[in-house]
Length: 105
Length: 520
Image: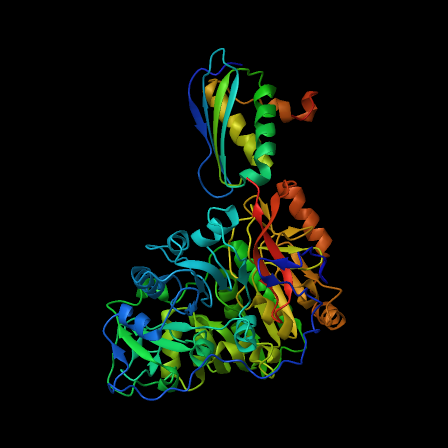
């Protein structure tokens, strides 16, 4: 998958995270993280974002994160939504359907 | 050395000699006579105690380098006195003062940090140093030779009367005062209500300066601080910002989680055998406490019972109960809003009390010893029921000790209320970062995910029986801790250096914990 344009998902409300994704052709993955829980969860948030981005097969992107204390599943959802918007594609819900013969993402 | 709650403490920090916390109920009881700095003084030759400016009052007080100054925090975030007095002191070139207010509120423009940086202040002792000052101390932006000493409300009168904290000059704000020094916070455009935190300073400082913006005809009425303790009176343009001293009555929260915690708390209290005619309680201010107060009022009406007294910092919700005849006496050590501030002068059963009689462990018994129920807030609680009310999840200074450690110790049943998680920050943790209130004094914790009773509390069996009889289910603290972890994950521990920046005293003056400089 390829990041074609800048896209945003999430809000700046408490317990949410605002994710902005921009194209970064040929320059790899660059994560810019601001978080109210940076000292406690900064490393984990980066790890989660790297994991989600690579699960979409994306290598080049700038991911800007403004985190207001979102828990892990919220971060995964917001990053996934931002990627789909930036890649101009629809989210593949079948990936979450075990009946479809695939593992849960 | 290691104290009774397992915290590692240095023997000495700067010149502060550490007396380790030995456990609740083990305070020493062999103090000598009360030590006071108060001077017998003749009447002023000029016939008035009124001086023209703060500078004049400071000069007349004899304030010199290295002395100790104090303030009360009854004007809360609306205080404009501390900034004006410190500016006047700086203008006079007086340095290296020990700054010992009852609490440091987040005073801005000018901030207290500036006065530390320019050397006006070199030592700090208070119940909390929330805001800019606290952050500067813990991050190492300002370096002090002596550790900041943090004391709960009940420990400050002890420190003063034992001679640990000798006050040279007390600058006491009052919303009305006469030229001979009688003063009050109950009337005037900047009324703060109870001046509970000013009495011990007025009684024991070498010199007492009343600062007011509302000079009234002699004698001022009512009289909170009597002329017999006052040396000088200064009139300034403004002592505070009324909107920040105390806004109107706080509305009932609509946050469903807070309402749920409040409802669970009220249910648990109502299930206790001690919830009967003539019971007593303290709930405090904030969204959850005010909802608890309102829910308790409903339960009291249902059961047709009245409380003998409500205690502590008082919000409008308690005054409302008084007006409905649900509480016989409201004893205010502080007034949290404009409604509560005005209620003292208007109602015979709403009284102003000295913080010392509210919370001092060495007051021959204080009022909070007579509480049946005490409700406390907290930033964190751990699986030993120890409470942190000072430092946030990243180690930053978030709160003040207030009367929490005192209420937990004094009340028959102390209830800690808090949400399981705040954002991604867990509130129930394996080990609190800063230990302020020992778990042995905490009877139960109420969260939206359930109520946990402390098996180590002296009223555990009684509470267990009463809650079971009312059909209230409980969970273990370990369950709550694991639930919080499963939601937010495991936070990386906060890293500190060995340098101690603050000492946390327990109500008996022993050291329950220390706060170390954060590693960044």
